[in-house]
Image 1 (spheres, helix red, strand yellow):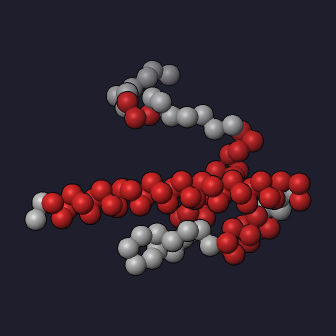
Image 2 (spheres, rainbow, N blue to C red):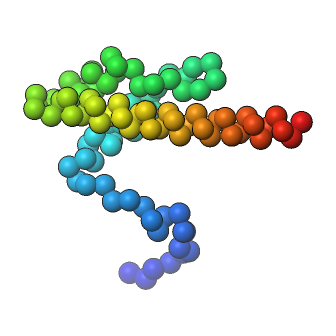
Length: 97
């Protein structure tokens, strides 16, 4: 098959996710897409939603705690990133006025 199109620099350094973590990443994405929004920013993933997702996906007892902590850690990093983006956007919009 002939390669077509244009190389996009942002896609060249995409990290490779270990296969054993793909389901956990997919869970984070699913839960993140369903999260509630607060007044000025997204809310953390609800613990009840996370526990229900872990239960629904029937993780073995030996990995449930890891899955729980991993998704909470990803959520904390994501929320920190979004908060910084929102603060930067707000600072830029107020400095332009």
